[in-house]
Amino acid sequence: MADSGPTDEALLAGMAVGEQAAVVAFVRRYQRRVFGLAYSLTADPTLAEEVAQESLIRVWRHAPIFDPRRGSVASWVLTITRNLTIDALRMRRAIPTDPDDFAASALMSLGQPEDGLQRDDARDMVRSALLRLPSEQRRAVVLACAYGRTALEISEEEGIPLGTAKTRIRAGLKRLRAALEHSGELENSDER
Amino acid sequence: MSDDTICEQFADNLAELALGILTGRERAATLAHVESCGHCADELDHLSRASDAVLSMAPEVEPPLGFEVRLLSRMRNDKVGSPRHVPHRWLLACAAAVVALAAGLGIGLSTGSSPPSAKVATQAHPTSSKPVLTASLIEDGSRVGGVSLYGGSTPVLTMQLAESSVHGTVTCEIVTDNGATHKLGTFRVTSGYGAWAAPLGVSPSDVRVAQLVSPDGATIATATLA
Image 1 (cartoon, one colour):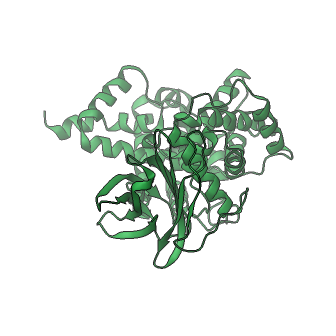
Image 2 (tube, rainbow over the protein chains, first blue to last red):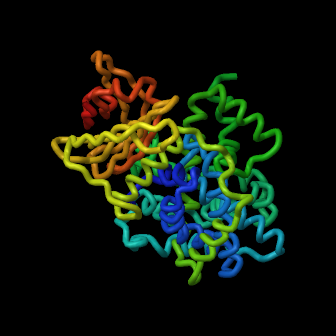
């Protein structure tokens, strides 16, 4: 990622001890991504703001126990956001966006500058790989990853055998994994 | 049954585990297998990164006007929910490092630029969070960060890097008065930026040099504290 400034981990350490400058910097760095994910799943700006605020508060509260060995700060923050969005949708019995719409909105930003920063080639590689997936595999991966659907739930919703749902999930994710490997992102991330 | 056959049995589950949708006995059995199989542990790690990448592809969207103000206001008023774990002394020092780095990057507070190798000694105080020694970290003749030493019952070193040429994992070492080298630990630098803190293990007054060392043993940057 071509972001500049203190690392996410350093900002999280600052948040953990109540350093206000770190809190503000972290919120400014992540608010568009967190709100963007919640909005992509709900298409409801009011609900997305509620979820985004709760997600960032949860990150702030739990900053002292973040464990970098279990993944990056970004994946931790976005996973919290995804889980809270799924919970909020279930509690309100609200209808989530269609996974094809989620994929389409993710793919629309392919090749466009994000937040004035230098392009993130690894993310573009994965976007391209997602675009090239057979539509049924793309839908299965997005349903599982972004909407938290289990293989059984996907098989029921899509009207396909459980084994087929599992195969689509596995095949789709392996192709994305191969795209990441090709981009060199996996090698770089191994250094941490 | 060969190892490959066993691993193949867990292939579907690995993908679902990486996506966070595997539950119950299947999840427990897969985790137990991953514990004992390096190949599958690596595969799970890579699939997890692919899964993370899908979430990160959601487009960035500008939140409604006033989002940040409302959020920061909630945090200020949230006395119960504020970070509740008592921070370790090293974490406090790390936060100080973050503040120093943020200052250097114009995020806030005062700037702290010093000429290369400048040493600033301040009076030690057992309860103060101020450093007893600071020095610039020099890489190829240019200042790329700073090192601070904190006293007290658990002396701590903090190190901040900004705009260095480093990317990846580096080792922090100190050289003491008697010429001995002590490895304090490793940390990750991303595109030249990083902040880190660790217990010093010796008195700050015994430290002569703090240095960053690459994985192949080459010294990348040095801070002279005496």
